[in-house]
Image (tube, rainbow, N blue to C red; front, top):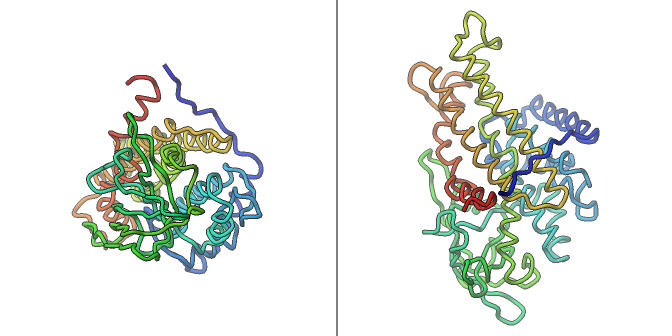
Amino acid sequence: MAELRFPPVRLPAEARAVREKVRAFLRDELEAGRFTPDVDSWGRFDPEFSRRAGRAGFIGMTWPKAYGGGEYSALSRFVVACEMLAAGAPCGAHWIADRQSGPQILRHGSELARRTLLPRIAAGECYFAIGMSEPNSGSDLASVRTRARREGDAWVIEGSKIWTSRAHQVHYLIALTRTGDPGPDRHQGLTQFIVDLKAPGVIIRPIHNLAGGHEFNEVFFDRVRVGDEWRIGEVGEGWRMVTGELAFERSGPDRFLSDYRLLTALIDHLGVEPGAEEVGAEEARAVGRLVAHLGALLSMSQAVAGLLAAGENPAVEAALVKDVGTRFEREIPEVARRFFSGPVRSGGADYFERALGRVMLHAPSYTLRGGTREILRGIIARGLGLR
């Protein structure tokens, strides 16, 4: 039976220095009143914050300087991501591009795509969405029906994507399309393309959520022409491309720190000294359990960051981080609700109530985005040789 790999990783001196730098940046941002801390902040869209973060060197950190990066280690970038989420900073504009689209273009895109897009992403001025999920397909990416057909020196894309976060606000998405025969395992004949969302034939329709927000969209491709230079990887290698991309998407700290600020607000609400007279044993045990789980998840995610930095594809380990991490995110509001008396209002009087109200509305989606738990556990079981 295969083994899961979570080798212990110590933060190098560079990463520790970067931590102090990003903390100073966030402290200045807060003191200047440029943003209000919030839960699930990597979903909050604030282009001005992204531009300031880009100017400070906190986007595209690991990329070569020739493409606008800083040539930092993956662990330094990991530290920045953790600090941004812990501070509740509005990272949503650049998050997808920095987390997965940019690395995918750097590794597998054309030189034209690298030189055109990566410096703009690193500057906090170019934003991406994910073009994987499709109607009636759930998390089964192998069932993709959006097709790309070769016409001369270009490709013509027809089909649709769904649950496409921020498609109405970003500039591009990377679309997974079918370009050939699926083969016996349905993993053949897939290819990824970078699609300009302002291109002729792209139609974006909003999907409003139950909280009244507009984050999700359905995206239609009506004979959208894409030049071959915007292809990611070789024709037919889309499955390998997309599984590598998902390792970036599933293993990061955003999969367990979305409601970190609710956890800290809960601790403030109960008292800073568990076990004191005003904090009962039940509350102390509940908070202690959550903090212990958070520490374990940080170590696991940091280990995956180290594997990615070594050029490996830890898809199974990333799936486990995502599965355990989003379960942890669902657990925080459940615990917090036990220790809040009365109805919860998202516009409540204090921060704890407001954070709890917001998370309760959005937490049901945590275990869906990035792949459902059923799909993830199937990946883990296959990776371990159990099915």
